[in-house]
Image (cartoon, rainbow, N blue to C red; front, side, top):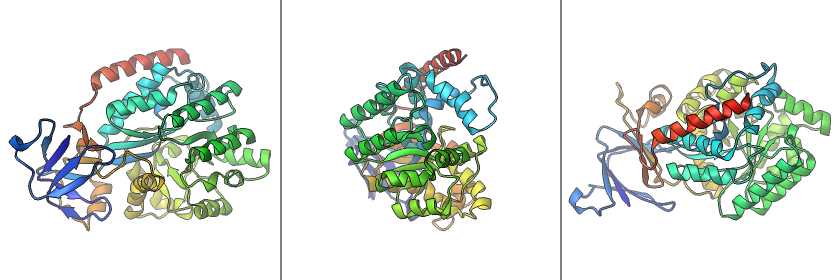
Length: 426
């Protein structure tokens, strides 16, 4: 299948160069885009080909999410926890660890399908997810991957290994990674956080990551308690512990959050070249603090931590909060917003080629130019302007409607599973 975008205003995601030529989009992981003088007439097309009129519309590369939690999708609107949390550890214990223990494969499937739809409609065509369901581990990653494939969104998955749920759950998590990566799927080795991971499990995870030529994906110093426990149990800080075990030798490693770091930890991260995922709204919601990422590394990408699936919203939040904490400019936040593409390319993962595009119906009251695009990015463009989305050369959202799946049916299914989950959580 070939798509032709007619009369677009194309904005290059790297240089902001504006190109006004028709675009030929070929399908597949190895597909590409080609600028042409004029799209062919409808009667000259193959039956499976399609022309999309983009007159008055902006076309640019679609987005990616550097850290998501699809398992939180059914949490929206759920009842209050049995105990109102007094700190971050209690937020985990009474909300998220309580929720993830109640998940089954049907609930995971519903979460993933709905989340993939929300991602797609927000222009996100590549998702790095960090999953947890300690009593429904087997086939959980396959279930998520299948759901994302159905919607048309590429994914990079891992399971959240931890010692907190006992030996059986831990072994199932290791086996799920083995089975998933052995099948040819792309992913990381997931770990919860240092304070729930013993030395044996940490070593096993890193050996597994080395075996499959990938990285680990772990929450790091999201709250001060992570550092306090590490100092108490091991006499060193979290990043130092990861460094000692070799986690920072894996260039595909993602350290999520990284709020409470000292100067030595920042240097270890910067010198290693591993990646950091910033999740600003989640950090604000959990009241764990804000970080000066510019003092850590340039390898920072944005995530949502399961709060939502709108990366434009995340970028704006990171900009507004970052001005007071880091004195960031619009260019810095845009670079973090787009860094996921550099991460995917450098790591050799598939599903984020130049044939991942979106069409914006952005009828601005002021001119959009290469010089002022960042101002439009921060203060103008939002997810409501996303009209159509192309993933790996295939149209997955057209005129704000899903193409490959029935959104209404999936959301009915999700609501049914949400009620079952909430009832189980009681």
